[in-house]
Length: 397
Image 1 (tube, rainbow, N blue to C red):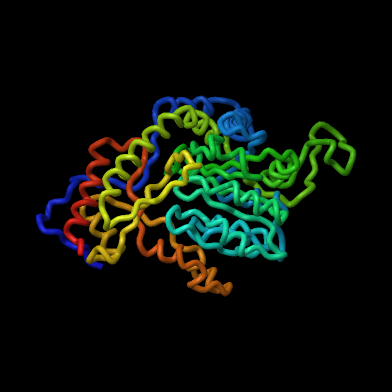
Image 2 (spheres, rainbow, N blue to C red):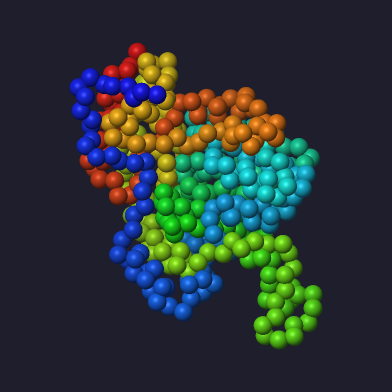
């Protein structure tokens, strides 16, 4: 599709700005270098150090780090006992892994609609989706705003379900003053480069339940244990171990762990800068009736991973696609998060049809993800605002 031209011709920026970017400093580089010069590149001391740091940060009793956020969701679902014939309720406005983790276990994802203003899964829709086959709820903290955990925990307790909080976006956020990661039965994190802190890749699962913790350890590493209390046979030497479950090679390297330990030291400044940018965006875009700013629940003190701008189509002469292209013509390169999961051909072939979640489907047609990351300068932020204002002013009805 041809990009819409705006009279005046000159973009608001000469150089492109993208929706996300990691921030790496010399402390990060030094942390990784030290591991590269050490005796352990994987299965070494940095893994335990990182897990302790995540527990201290969140207040969770146990943390298990792993290869990525998808692996974290998989072992969380396995530890929750999700299996063949079960159902797992989740949102369609998320990366596919939030639903795929149910499929990995032989279960079926069930999609519940979102709140049209916060964009997080609607607890009332979750309750309505529960059946005798429901085993767990995967609730996504979309954009970094906490899901409303209290009603979701009540629903799960009432029906004997496990609450898995997909916290891929949420590190640094608190719910009712308590850090996310220490509240749900299981909480997963992702450390992809566009997230608030990164290990290049990486994930983690946090829990307060020792039984779940022991299962997570097994599923992370082939189902193998060296714990004699769990073995079925007498060890015949110090080298002895047993595979007692079907696990996976989902281990994190010490290289990634070292980078994450260093990144977590910077989380307070990452959090503060992201909140500054979000506040400036909200101030600017909240004044424009052609746009809708995501509503935040008072229980969530949010560290935003994504900034979602929603257009009001009836007040503009262009749709979301042309709005997206117009921003690119101004050298502001955005993204869209997310395509409803059940739109994908793989899910269509399983029988999922459009129309399941009207609020989610309408949201998808109207949103773009604006640039948001720690290293954005004040001028970068103002360039994004000027680009949006220019397009709205030109195309308003």
